[in-house]
Every structure is written in structure tokens, then in C-alpha cells.
Length: 198
Image 1 (cartoon, rainbow, N blue to C red):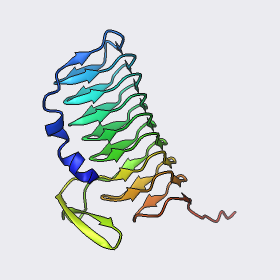
Image 2 (tube, rainbow, N blue to C red):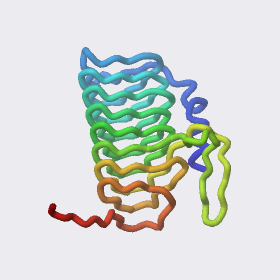
Image 3 (cartoon, rainbow, N blue to C red):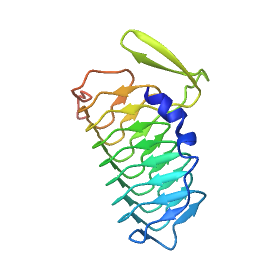
Image 4 (cartoon, rainbow, N blue to C red):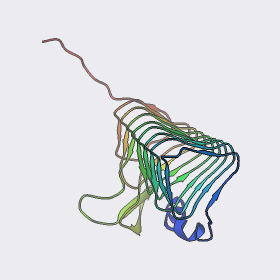
């Protein structure tokens, strides 16, 4: 299950050692702490803060003032925008994460696009552990912090919010400012609005 991958991320990265490929470019004002591995062709921009264990693949771009912390793995060809924050996340190949996004305790599958200011909410306001719904069954993960699964090739518009434990089906499209409150079948979703003059 995807939440088990999140829970075991720290263990799976426990053998990671600091490494910067000779063909990577790390800006002098970027800060790398702990065990951080950076693949060939990856560029870490000015002001980025990365606190390991963090593994970053090949040909990635980590934007200015981005923060990556906790046990996080980032695949190849990933683009992370200005001031985005990732924590304890699994990000697969070819993902684009826009500026000022927050992706925490979540898995983002390959080829996804997250517009600016997308948020993955990772804890319940009532303090209970996060449940994941599979069909008609609600499974208690036992985790106090758990974000979401964003399925492969999905696109989330500006300021989309995904609530804890939710799953976005592969190839879905959510227009700006949608709040994903429940699991939905793959498709295209938007908020209907009525604009009035006054």
C-alpha cells in the first residue's frame, strides 16, 4: 500500500550517503544538510534548503528557496518550483511541482503536474489517525501524519487542496481551487461558479 511506502521511507533511505554528481550544479547559497544525494545534470538553485535523508535523481531542477526535508525521494526529470516545500515525500519521474506548493507525507506518481500553491493536507484537525478509503472500506493507517496519493499523469490546477488519505485517480484533471474531499473516479473536475455584477 502507498501509505506503507511513506511510513517506511526513512528506513529505505537509511543507507543513503552524501553524494553530488560531478555533472550536478549546486548554487553556492543552497544549503545541504545531512545525507543528500544529487544525480547527474540536476540543478539546485539559490536559496534552496535540503535536509536529508533526501535522494534526488538525474536532470532535476530544484527552484529558488525550495525546501526539501525529512525522508524524501525524488525521481529523474523532476521540476520543483520557487519556494515549494516537500516533506517525507515520494516523487516519481517526470513530475512538475509548481511554485509555493506543499507536498507532505504523500506519493506523487510519474508524469504528474501540480500548479502553483497546490497543497496536500497531512493531518486531521480532530487529531485522529488518518484513514484511507478503498472502495467501501475505510482502513485506519494508524498514522497521525499522512497526505495523499496523486496518480500517474494527473494534473492539479492552481490552489487545489487534497485532504489527508485521499487518492487522486491516474490521468485525472482538477481545475483551479478544487478541494479534493473524497476519492473520485478518474476524470476532469472543476468548480462551477456564477459571476455576477453589482
